[in-house]
Structures are given as structure tokens and as C-alpha cells.
Amino acid sequence: MTPAEKHLIEFLKHTAKPSAEQNFQWPVFTKISIASSLQNDPMHESKDAYSSDDEILKTPSNLSSNEVVKAMLEEKRRQREKEEGRTSSASQPKRPKFVSLNENLVSTEINKEAFPVSGLVWNENWDPAHASESLVVPLFEFGLEKKQTLVFRMTVPENSDKWGISICPKDHDEFMNVLYHFNPRSKERGGVLIQNDRNAGEWGPTVSHRLSEYPPMFGLTFDVSIQIDDWGFHIVLSGEYQLSFQHREPIEKFINDGELVLEIPRTDDYDYPQSLCLHQVWWGNKRPHPNQPSSEVLNATGGRGGDVSSGLEISSTNLHISNLPECRNQSEDAQMRKELEELFAPYNYESLKLISGKGYGFVNLKNADKSTLAIEQTNEYNLMGSELKVTRAKSKVSQ
Image (cartoon, rainbow, N blue to C red; front, top):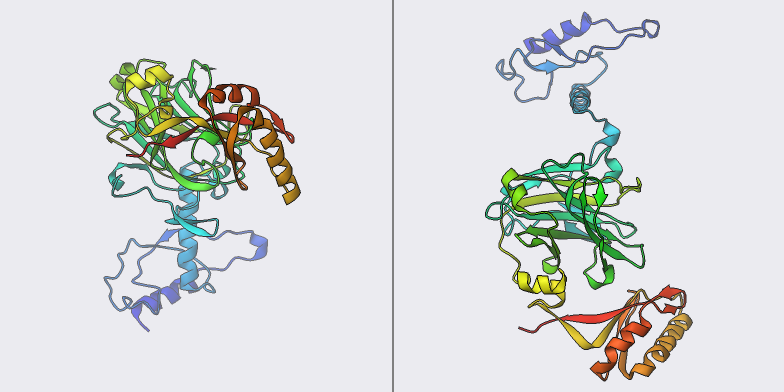
């Protein structure tokens, strides 16, 4: 038996075990001088293995040394959480490198080659369901020639109703001032994407887009990029440019501050919870997306530059139909197709293609001069209880 082990035995002998009547709690941490209490530790023969200031638990002798260590670590964790003003029930789960989504493993990490880890300003899971307040991340060194690109990696459940993020000035007055708000809503009016700003607590005019016109933002793990320039905010989803939002406040005044603030609210303004899991946030400087339209094009289209950018073109004959009713069997599917054929017959359609199970499709007209009338007269048509959304289809320009 080593001197260290004798020392431990003597210590435990003189440590009285409490009786139930005493209602006594064991002290948690006590500093004692001891070489090692682990019999199988290869370092226990060395008197220099631990210093005299090592912290161990003063504990009953019927606990193993492993249980002592576990209890010590658990107590340290509780103390740390108490100091940070949170409890274990509200603590966020650690970020795994992969998540399981639709029976596939998907990375939770932003592309390190394109976005170096040195630019990460958030690097752990954040889920509103485990949070007591909104997530707030300062964005330092803001400037059009400095840091002006924000990238999120997140997982949004398929059953999520909505999620949103806000970019605010440094002096946001408890988020009463918002420069840019991005808010997809899957179940409102067939699915909408909301963009807006907020000034002194009052939301500005809402800019609303049909969610079906953009890549999926529910039921997957994906990246969202927001780039800021002197025109406005430019949105890239899963690597492809989508749309823009023009500044409603001169950006120069916020450049002078040199700092913005990212807020991901836990709930909306009506305390309705958001549903998402944020994995990483990157902040740095990047060149504009190659398909991002020029300021002239954006001014001409009111920010819908994605409709006429160098990467997308509007079809003159192909129409996009969304918010189709969900069919439960082949009979309902056949009925829906028949009603659509009758609906577009007056406009001399050439073909009708429905994307099974996705709630949208395309109808191609023979003559472009019928397209405007077809949209005016079929949009918001009630088909089997669903209000159709009919717009001109967009396609990539061949390079």
C-alpha cells in the first residue's frame, strides 16, 4: 500500500458518515494534499502526479473513485450554470458534427474551405425550445470593405410553422429597431416569405413573396447567406442567389458605428414559438454572388432582381401553379388534373405537369399573349378547397 493510499484511508476513517436524523449534507469540495486516490492510475506511484492544491470530493467511503470524479464534474457543471444564470433544463445541447435528417446524416458545419473557422461567431446548437430568451450575437467590424457577409447553418423541422432572424443596429433599443427581418412562414396563406424593417417599435410595409417560388426552407439542414452592400441586403439560399431587400435607413450611419447585432427571436411578437436549430454563424467579407443583380436592375424591379438577373429568366409561356390540394388517393388526383385541364383550356395550353406530392406544377401555354390573362383569371382560383397561386415560371439561363 502506497503512502497516498494510507493517507486516503486515514482521511476516510476520520470523516464521519451522517445519520438520517442529522439531515446532514456532505461538503462538496475540499482542498487536501494527496498524491492520488485512484489505485489503477499509472501515475499513482509518482508523488508529483498531482499538486497539493488538487480539488477532490470529501465523500463517504462507499463511493468509488470514478463516482467521486463524476460527482465532482457534475457539481462543477451546476456551479458554472448557476454563475451563468441558467439551469440544466434550459441548457443547450452540444453541437454534433452531423444530424440525422430523413434517414440521412447531414453535416452541421458550414463549408470550411469557403468560410474559414476563424470567422465563426457562433458554434453550438441553439434551439428556442431549450432557450429562455432570444439569441443575440454581436457582429463586430461591420463595413462594406470589412465584414459584411453573414452565413447561417441551421436545421428547420418539416413541421415548423415559421422561423426568422433580424439584423439590428448597435443601438437597437431592445430590438425596437430592426434593419432587416427575414421570416419564412410555411402555413400562412399557402406559405409566404416575409421581409421587413422596424423603426421605433413599428414594423414597416411588409414585403411578401410566395414561399413556393424559392428553394425549400423547411424540413432540411441548409445554409442562409445575407450579404450587405450600399443598396441593401442580398439573400443566398443553399448557394444560389434568390432576392434582395433595399435599405430603408441610410447604411452609412451604421457603418460609422462599426457594429451590427444579430437576433434570432425565441418567439414571434405574439409569443408563438419558433422552430429551428441553429448550428453555426459565420461573419466576414465575401465577394457578391455571381448571379446577384446590379443596383440598376434591382431599382427597376423593386428588389425582385432574382426574376430578371443574369442567372434567372421569366418564361413568357410557362406558368407555375402552387398550393395545389393534397390528394389522398388516385381518384382525387385524377379529379384535380381534370379540373386543372378545364381551368386552363380557354388559354390554349400545350401541356400540364404536376409534381407528385409536392403541391405544385406547371402549365405551358402555346401562345405568350394568353399568359397575362391566364394569370389574372386563374390566380386565387379555389380548386378542391385550396386557393391556387399562379405566377410566371422562372428558369436558369444556360451559360
